[in-house]
Image (cartoon, each protein chain N blue to C red):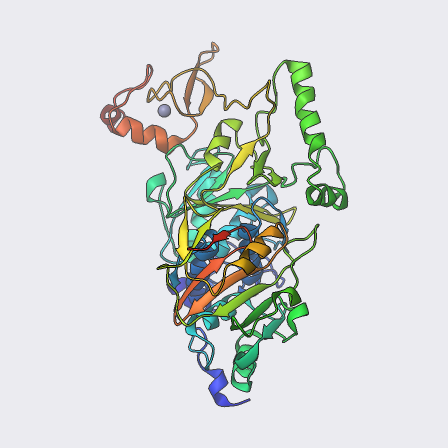
Length: 190
Length: 311
Ligand SMILES: [Zn+2]
């Protein structure tokens, strides 16, 4: 393990994680809402926001699937050192991280069971940017009338929502910002 | 902030921690426990009304004091929060005061009794009368999270019933009420169907509060410690109280104005005031009542607020 992997974690874990979780909670409770987070300095290609989400939510009980370019030594070492999370393929993942192209195909991840729909993966999708402008129209729980968020595509989220109460949940990250899309959100083209 | 810098201490690592001990982690719980609760909270928000299992920890207070709610609050609080704790609508009961002090001490958060000023509100048995906002989180203490429990004691069976949306028995139980009493007698913990899917126990709030759950701008989180369940209602989410076409749901309350502030829209407690059986009806939400009296409202038995404050 290189010494670089020892850096970039939370300086004051209990408080940094508390603030980061509030951002994640607000994002998941209000789909499309973009939150800014801080406290992690992860190695490339992990964004600050993806790093913060992993530090806040992962530990030895949560297998993580690293997809595509994110599956590299620097990222593995950093996650191992700071969270102790084991790595897995998509089928065993509680969390997955990667670009939209890299996390495909989505049917490889657990979507929960009829009696335990919570046993489903959360995908942390690294985006080039996060914006509401020109984005897909979102509605459903957490959204008063409608919200907007630019998504990599839309049909796939409609298929995911149709699985409810099963399904995947998404956290989109870019730089130090994140937004979320739970399985309940209805997604329409702009 | 200083609380977070104190030496981390694992909760439940043997040795009963006293409430005054200084060597606790931020918001008392250890980081691994908070992560586990936080993951459960995100899934609870993603599946509104569904009960997510979690591994509840021993807390330095009895179960009846709302350890589920306390654990949820511990997982969501930040140092910037201003917390309010109510028990049956009141901020000044032993239970509410103890929990408020607990988080003042362990998380260093500011506290308040005023609903509009609070960012996190932990509650037992009521939803505040003042409308909640987008900037608030309401944490409910839940004794029995399973609305089907009294129909089916086995967890494996109730899980299947939820999976199959088998809620017919629930309606039968409510209809038996109507047959026996002429109306639905269930007055507390009246079940709601969340977003047309999961039937949920809203905790033992009076059914008067049920309509406040639906379309609420705040995030609503529910924690059951002994039964180890977390569930949630996201903002702006549908939550329909179960009813029948010929017996629609009614959010009833005592048919009086508050004797102190004159409010006609708030849930009332009946209070015995003398040895001869005299009684009056007053707001159960003490902060709501105080705010109304401060604003100059006076009920039939209430002195003007200024006078009362000087007495
Ligand atoms: Zn009153």
